[in-house]
Amino acid sequence: MGKGLASEKHKRAIEERRELVSSLVRRKLTIRRICAELEAAGYVNPATGKAWSHNAIHEDITALKEEWRQNAQANIEQHFADLLAEYEEVKSAGWQAGNLGAVLKAMDSQREMFGFKSMTTDYDWRKELEDAGVKASDVFEAMVNKIAEHIGGE
Image 1 (spheres, rainbow, N blue to C red):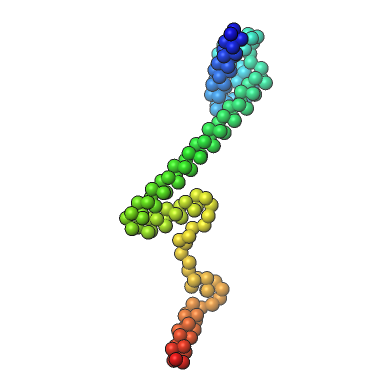
Image 2: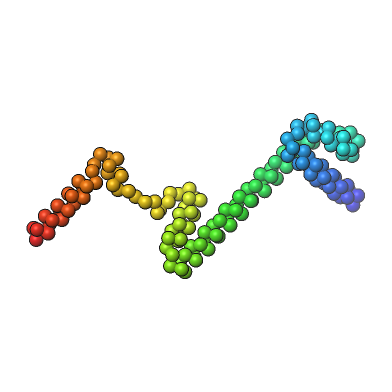
């Protein structure tokens, strides 16, 4: 029973130290400075009565960074899920209101979020022809002449 109590006390001591270390790391202090700051504040290793070792502080920093990374990942995933839910709501409202523009815009936003190209991008066939060195008016005139031939040939 005494051993479990000591273990809990040890865990609490680590958590308390990591809370302090966390604050100091965010202030961009080095491990050496963190050890000195903890010692100056009277926060020392209870087993030795001396400053915490650089190794102990390094382990704290490693554990804290992993915790921060996991929290950031969870926050990103939650933000992503929230955005998807909002887009679904916009699409639903768009369908109900008969506003296909809103539906398509929400769908485009979702596609962009997943890294896909927009489906409602305007296609300028005249510009593409001109870029290829062809006059759009010549293409249109040829189409009209073909239609006229077809109609005249019937």
